[in-house]
Length: 213
Image 1 (cartoon, rainbow, N blue to C red):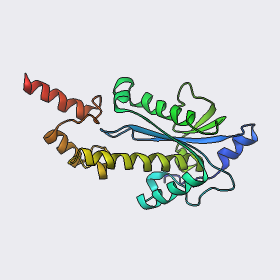
Image 2: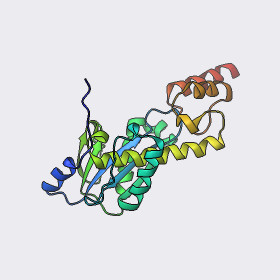
Image 3: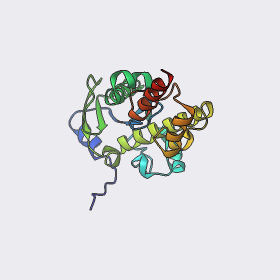
Image 4: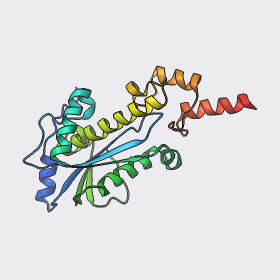
């Protein structure tokens, strides 16, 4: 049976006990979609003002995420950053997600001296020391907070983009390759917000190029 985690403040507490003074949780969302940027957030929680119910953003309803996002924006130090579709296509999605994480950390009003990063790969050239935590968004409240902020912001961005480019279903699929999205790609074509380096998009462009010749 899969191990069930409840996020807590233990990773943060350990880092503080080992000499860190300001600990940030960092997470990104949007590696898998065919459209839109990859979005990262860095969050510094105040130990005496940790919102109840923080968890991996994927385990929360949109309504609960939005409520927690609003509380976090009031009570925590939060920084949000993106890597664009152009950057994703130029340097690849992994490097772009790491770039967004670095930007989020660098954008904090109070500079963190230790970062808890979701996943198993530490981005290069981070502005501070840190560690990676596998399933970090389900184990550390700071990373859970970052995952909630990043997902809420990116989902809202994709809703806005859906109004500019109707038909792809971005308001519900957030740019992921749903059936609606893939059908629209074939019927409506590729937008400036699509990731040309991703195979389904690349294939459509290649087919269009072949047909036009």
